[in-house]
Image (cartoon, rainbow, N blue to C red; front, side, top):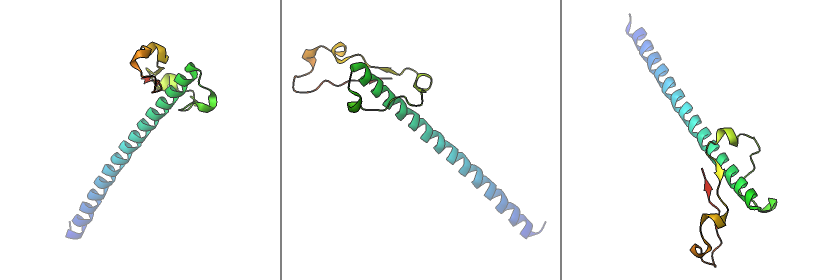
Amino acid sequence: MTPRTALNRSVLILLVAFLLVAMTWVTRMDEHVASASLEQYCEDAAIWAAEEARGVPLNERAGQPDWENKAAEQCPGMRPALPAYQVASPSVFPATQPQRQLVQF
């Protein structure tokens, strides 16, 4: 084997190793982005459902509706919080501050 052939093989092995590492990194980043996107979707759907249960008008709601119909199966444990009057007694919240609706996952 000539030195030139050995060099070519070494470069090829390093190139293949680099490509494998790069593909692994890209796959992990894709999984991270998909996980973060699903988490945000679930949070927005839970906020929308909680405000819908409280009777907030359609044009004043936060979050987003479950437009992909996947929250029931993709967001296990997602449930809107109880109405504000069941979370705590009115004496806990000062009259000057609005009561906040909590979303539980």
